[in-house]
Length: 193
Image (cartoon, rainbow, N blue to C red; front, top):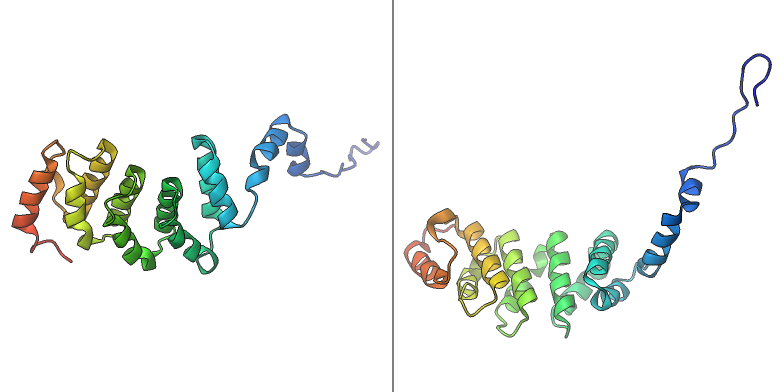
């Protein structure tokens, strides 16, 4: 409404939330995200384990958003010994993303377990590099063996490069384990602990 003096009455805005809620996409989002609004890490981890890969990414982001170390740290560490490799890998990712350095001894112990699934070995190699865990170098060298899956070998090789500063001195190849073993034999005393 515009008065004779040209001044308009201000119509009260209902806010952007009301606008978005009228959109069809909002309803689709609410249906997609309704079951992940929980703050309970255990519930979210179970839903992550049961979800499709695309949905797992959304749930992982939710876990990272609601994670509180005083409440959820123990749950993450317990998940490293759980039966699901998917949950083990997620726990490693969360512990690394949240900078949980107190988990390092458990991560090293987990890396030493040769029966872990490939996705877990891959995430552990990445964790060793991120936390700069040099004591893991001998085990990472073993993971560059041709008997390991390519993703595991690649993650171990990348972690070794980050931890040792070897740069391009050791190239990734089918003989990477032998090359890393020789490099480590000759340089282990010069790598800062």
